[in-house]
Length: 388
Ligand code: HEM
Image (tube, rainbow, N blue to C red; front, side, top):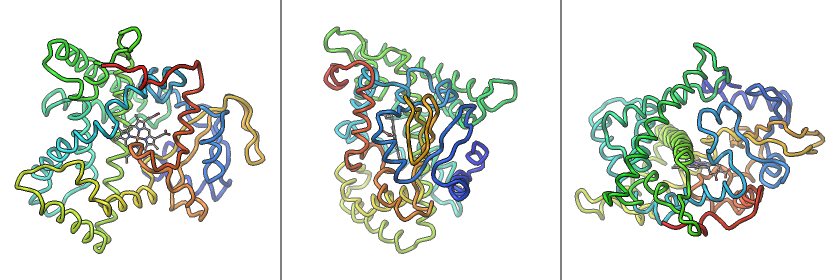
């Protein structure tokens, strides 16, 4: 599977596996005994079973850090998630539309305009990275941003690799790159804290400033430790980058071969542009008028889900589809894609929506999150306990 991921044939690997062994099978993945599952019954299990908990393979944990949100449950999960939502909630996001628009315009002028031929993949990845670096870390163009971009690219290389920390192995390179990225993020965090204390910046400036400014309402202590802020900004960097860039790349690929859809989309954008003064940036409200564009995005995610799958582990023995999943086993759940070919995967269409639009998940994902929050000790929600 790791080879398939690296050679961009992951989907083919899944199809072949289903054809050979059906939607449930076992394998060894990242050195752990694993149950592979996909399809409607697997979706139901993953989103409703109390006996499964999210758990990333050890290699991801070592690369992203032990306090990253994907690892947390109970109070810790609620607290960290609540803190991140302060920055990622729609009310906050509406402030960033203009900044994103400016970054896109800069890219179009610098590397797209006037070119007879462009290679979309690296350009989209660069654009997504630049947007994230501006919004999440407040990093302007320059040496620090380049250092983070290089470390990030090296880190991704070994993320799906055999987790052996040995010379010349991709995993070791990835671990080292993760340390480099972490050093950059630790330095930017120190800078954000200093600026906040001197009153030279605001919590709304970027994700790091926002997380650094949050205090627990009861004790007045910092809501997140520095380690939690760094680990979780690493997660957001990875979670936001690979998903959004993959979506845009495949949308463009589809549009390049579908002139009718492209024309309707261009018309929708021109309608919005013609009501704008020269140089006026995009507003949150304009996004609501991009209904057709949004449908193209949804259809693209339906055809090619940007997330390949997710990792869980069994908290107890589970009986599933006539099989027994032993306690402690890793479960790799592959996201359904239209191209996997089973007509009944249609009913899971909503699962591939981006996390910012969870309301449309029909409550399934939020129920799953509630269960995850309920694991461990009880307590108020992160949002309730927040101040700052
Ligand atoms: C097309 C774009 C995107 C897609 C398809 C996508 C998809 C997903 C999915 C399926 C999950 C798992 C959700 C769950 O199981 O609860 C997830 C989690 C997450 N995503 Fe996204 N995402 C996208 C963009 C982003 C962006 C832009 C960011 C941040 C800037 C982001 C940050 C996160 C975080 C922090 C989590 C973990 C949330 C948690 O565990 O509660 N994602 N995303």
